[in-house]
Length: 110
Length: 233
Image (cartoon, rainbow over all chains, first blue to last red; front, side):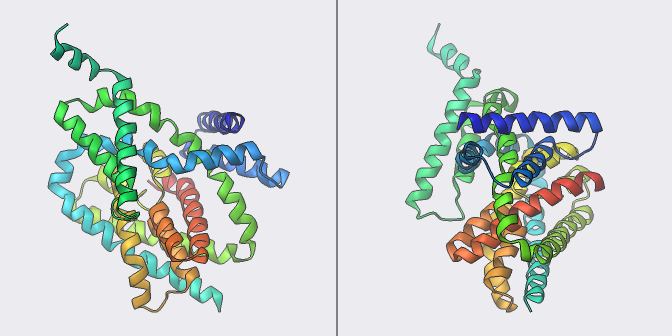
């Protein structure tokens, strides 16, 4: 578990280094993820420690998100003024996306 | 020290807020189990509401809270790096459908995002909110990371993602049934593409096949968006 977490952190730091070195706008964690994915593809397998660490961290995601969401308390003006509009936008915009996705998948299956 | 100043002192400590957040999450989880995993009240939503109530009741500024909260949100980084694990498994098991899936989820998710951004632009008209909309279709840790790159508001992004997930999980399956596109592959992919992790947990309830396609679509959409969106905005 700890060994796996260590590897995840190493790749995160690596992502951070590459991001500031190349100055690309892609999040450093995503760069780290892609580097690790490339490593898996090269070695054709996932070391057990890394798999364990990733699988133990993932279900805790909601806990890690709460502090960020709580920042909404600084956005009460936005919510009061635009809350309903934003809710409608978020819901309506799902419809074309879901239909297009499903259409392409169904078309591809024929 | 008087009782009041002890309490005041405690409310300034990061460890107090870390404890409150953990407690709120555990309580939220308990409610969730009690309601038979009701998808409209995930632990992240109830936990968030409880933390907000605590902040509001004690009049604690967010800056003070986040010193403790950051200890938890720091873990979003390693979680995103760890997404490479499911991605590797999916790449392996779905090699043949890879091309069509990538086409479906990139077009589908970009249409959702473009619609949301266009509507926000004309209806709300505040650039920072429009930019924040760009990350609404991806799982929260990635959305937050994207928002930091695009100068959006991370807290707002997290809220957009939450609403998108809950609404998507609720409306996508009946919507696709209505237009007769509801194969397990199509519904699963649409759930993962448009409603990320919440949609994926809805897919898990539908069937294993739904779940596999949703999980694959969710991880691929997140990586694609993280690679593309910061360049556009």
